[in-house]
Image (tube, rainbow, N blue to C red; front, side, top):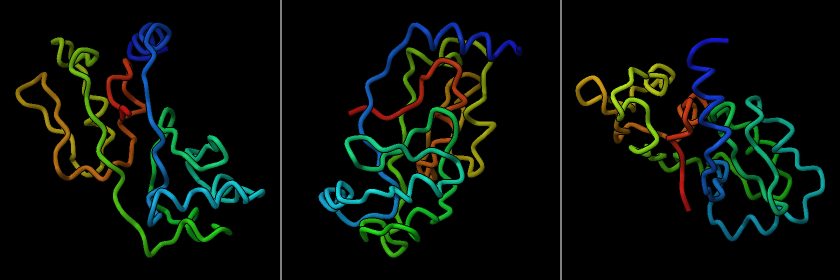
Length: 155
């Protein structure tokens, strides 16, 4: 077990985070997700290559705890209810960094969020202060790698 995994195990067991539903990035209106209740097959969940689509209250939601969205479009291609469509593709809202929970903001060298970000959406001001910039597409890969769960969305 690596040192960062130890930190993660220690902090994750004591910290709980409020979250809200994040939907796959291929929808027009949130109200359209009511149609998902009629869908029995939930094919969008089954085709997700990253296994981040979970069904919450009969609607697809994104869980970034272990991976992120590659924007592969597969969920939109198989949506039987017509809720998800490639024509509606949009970025997912950017997550926020909780400065109180972030190791780097507390002068501990950690750059896991920056290391995994393929589009350079996380910048460090100096050595220790990470910030998410306007390049962020909301893919969520940074969320799952944060050892203290300091990155996420809040409702």
